[in-house]
Length: 370
Image 1: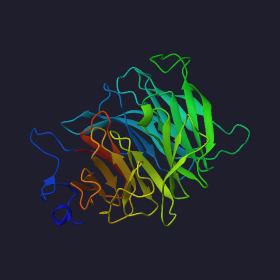
Image 2 (image 1 turned 120 degrees about the vertical axis):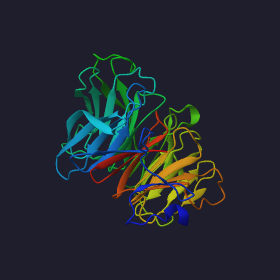
Image 3 (image 1 turned 90 degrees about the horizontal axis):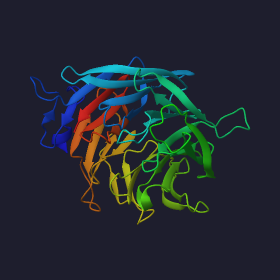
Image 4 (image 1 turned 180 degrees about the vertical axis):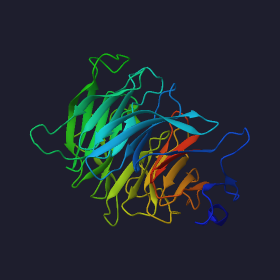
């Protein structure tokens, strides 16, 4: 690992290969490895577009500690000069805790974007003008003037009519989206949502929710929360849940992420934890691996969309890519490391362009070719 990480704080940032070589932006007609966009605000939430006709398009959410926040839609339009163009922008109440584009890899659905914060909102991007319009505000707490903020949500990849949200009020809610009929290319129909089910998922706040591809990819989801547990649910049998893991120190678990190719595996991370915990649902309660090479608390995790063996994690200034195929033997070192100019608070691996990872730090977003 010394050759990998012999990249001190005074050196320029760059991607480090295991032999110590540095993968930097290339010049003179070669493909660039890194593209950078500087936003007019601090960034937090981020999402790659899934549509095949909208490559290098991302949505970025501001993190401003006041009511008025922004979401920008940007796209890399000039690969040679590394120029990102702002394709759309809209106001958002409070910072977005998460942003997701509709999981439409064929480009047959309306161009929808969802955000979570005080509520779940569905936005539609106009095909021609790029204008963004609020389609639906989904509020599951209509009997009260107060809302319980949403910490995260997930959009079901197999059935894009299903969205699951997690909240500080200990609940998860599964929404059914409707566009007059099943979501299809019906650009004139507005999107509405109804609560399919709401359940008390944890003893304390729920911090994340994610659908699994297991069992057909529609009905199974998991959540993590402040009680330090990972719990798995099945929409067909909501009367009980399975505790997959409980943190020994009862530290809150902040994020979970299912393996995109092998639904037996998921990753999670604890508050202020210096490691990523890999779990196998077939062997509950005991991590099958822990990825420990971080020097600061882990802020993000993302599985490769095209490989069951690769996962990216991010901490203070580093994004690390791990090859976990030798599990259950210990995974000592990452295979790639990238050092950024600031504290990385978000990492996303592009489903439609698996050669690219995006990271956010301060007011910068970088996409890295891997």
